[in-house]
Figure 1 (cartoon, helix red, strand yellow):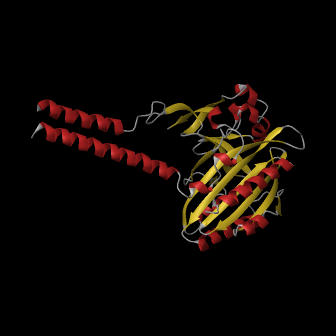
Figure 2: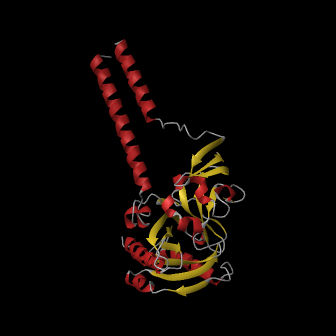
Figure 3: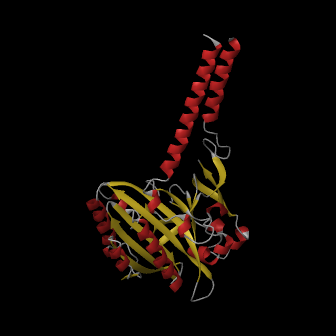
Length: 212
Length: 122
C-alpha cells in the first residue's frame, strides 16, 4: 500500500469522525429545543437576569403527590410528552410597597390528537369540583377567557385564594387547548394587585406562544 | 510505511478519546456527595402549591443556604434551614422552602437553586 493511499485513508477517516461528531452535537441541541419546548415561557419573557428560570422535559417523577392540575394531564389518554418552565417573577407589592414576587409554572402537554387534549382539559377542570381543594379556598373565573377566545384557544382562567403558613395567598391559573397541545400557566403569590398583573402579562405571552 | 501506520492508529485513538464524554469529578458513581440544587420551583400540591430545591440524589441532609446572610438568614422561617423538611418522605430529594421565606427574602437569592447546598446519596 503506498504512502499516498494511507494518507488518503487517514484524511477520509478524520473527515467521517468530524462530520459524525458535528452531527451528534447538532442532534443534541435540536433535542433540547423541540417545537414543544419552544411553547413554554422563555427567559426573554421574564424580567431581570432570570437566574431562577429553569425549563425541562417533564419526567415521570417531576410532579409528585396528590392529584392536581399539573399532574392530572400526565395520566390522560393519548399523552405524548410535556415541557415545564419554572421561574420567580420579582415585583414590588402595591399593598405593602415592599419587595415581593410571584412563582411561575408554565407547562405544555402534547397529545396524539386534539380530542384527547380537550379531554385532558376537562379532567383538569373537574378537579375544581373535587375534594382536593382546601375548604378555605375560594375560586373565581377571570376575564382572561376573552383573550383566550381571541386566540381561538379553548380554555378557562381562575383565581384561587387559599391559606398557607398562616397567611392568605392567591394563585392564578390559565388552562387552554390549541390543536393537540394543552397549556397550563400558574402564577402564585401574595394577595396583591401586582400578582394579578404578573398573571395578565404572562397569560398574554403564553397565548401568543401557542400561535405557531 | 510503519510510521504511516502508527500515525493512522494514533489519529484514530486520539479521535476516539476526544469523542468520549468527560467523566464528572463532583458526582460519584455511587455514594454520598455534597452538591447544590439544580432547580428551585414547584414541587407538589398539598392544600396549595409547595416549592422546593431539587437535588440530584436522595436522602438529603446537612442542608445550607449559600446566598446573602447564609444559614442565619433563614432562622426566622420555620425554624431555619436545618429544620426544613425533605420531600417526598421516602426519597427525600427535594428540600421544601417556606413560601414566606421566598417572598420576603428573594433579594438574598432565596429562589435561586444554586444557593441551596446539601449532602445527598447518588
